[in-house]
Image (cartoon, rainbow, N blue to C red):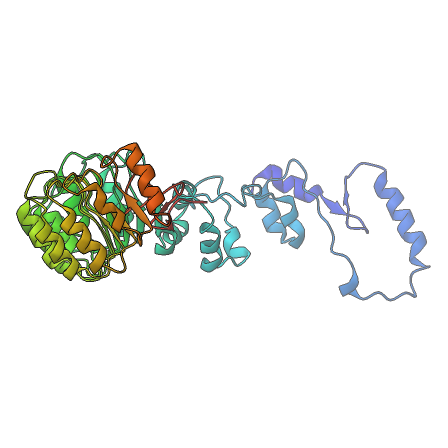
Length: 435
């Protein structure tokens, strides 16, 4: 303690009320007289020492905080103000100057479950900001329950970020019309080289019309998936590796590969042999040839309810014999689209109407091999799409002959499509966007 502080303490005296008395002033004489005059009147009153209030000792401006510590005054704490007194709701680094030594979340007993419940109401951007606050928030924000649904549609997201989301436990991810640049180099521990490592929990993936440079990206992502239930790669690139990765998902029910390039016999065989519970399959405009069509209609699982194999424009690729095989393989079809198949004739149409009692929707648009008069036998169908097959007078005639059938009710096919109508925030009826 400095000499100046010692002098200040020596001069500091307390009066009877516990207040500081400054030497040299007249206040000490007045206080002495008042004390002596009242001593006689209060001499007979006994007051317990414990009931007396503790003296309050103000700190002179000349005194340093170290001097109060030596006074052992219990009431000295009110004279200090914590540097973080107004930052209780702002988490600071422990080594920061302005950080408070008191952790508010520990003081008020905030459990991990309570904080996780609060985090569940945050969107992904706010959740990432909280994760940067402290190690505890980072640990709680990485809970897989908070990353089940991801919507990155129409955004630019690098490949590494997608893999990070999969590692956090994402189950449903929407990447429709997303731009995915390649920023990962194949390493020795890469999942593209070792597909059995680090599988993810994805069940629904929508990559419709996503923009990417290499099919390696799709192969690397799908090789981590073994629990897929719904997948859409519309207008994408595939190869045999992608098809083999799709076939490793035995629970796959919805598959949309419309307008994909790169499908071949081996790839399709890997898909239909590995996914035996398929319900909706869309292979429209994938350039199927005769070999692919024959293999497909003979190996499709009997669980398929809605099928789209339209766009086989080459002659003798999809024939009446293939339709007959399809009727035997998938006898529970409720919707079938074989539009733009010039080789299909009225024989195939009659077989579909007679041998598929569950069929409710049939699309045979631009199938010019079917006689227009054959459409009059489709009275038990709910929807019949025949765009480009008959004239306007023929449409009016069919509407009169088929009063219970909607003619040309659907402009576009919705088979296995993830987003239908105005449900822009859902894929296969599963919400993915933060509320």
